[in-house]
Length: 96
Image 1: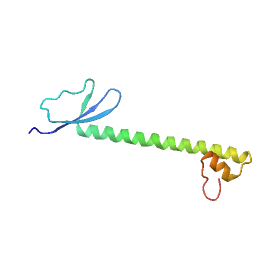
Image 2 (image 1 turned 180 degrees about the vertical axis):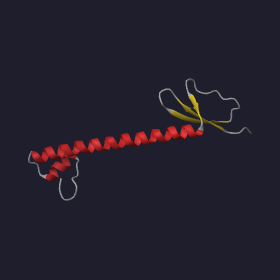
Image 3 (image 1 turned 180 degrees about the horizontal axis):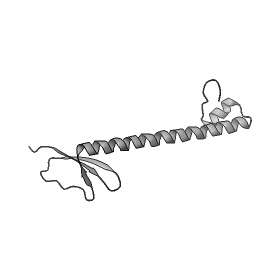
Image 4 (image 1 turned 90 degrees about the vertical axis):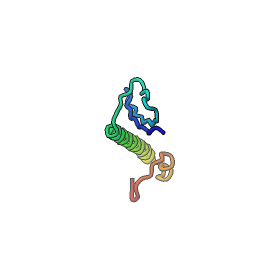
């Protein structure tokens, strides 16, 4: 039985890929850069951190938009409970 080999790739568009095979002389994907395990782990960790940062920024922007809608509704004279329901914003306990 052949040993399992693991190959790590980075594609020109930034995608990362891992492939395991028992082929003795495998063909690698066209255009992919072969990485070692350490490079792959480092690039994958950087990609995951960037994704988490983007998600945090998206959540913060959504929350700011909700707060802006809430504040506008309050300024227009809406009851705070109605403003909260319409905007989706939950003000902190003790005030907006």
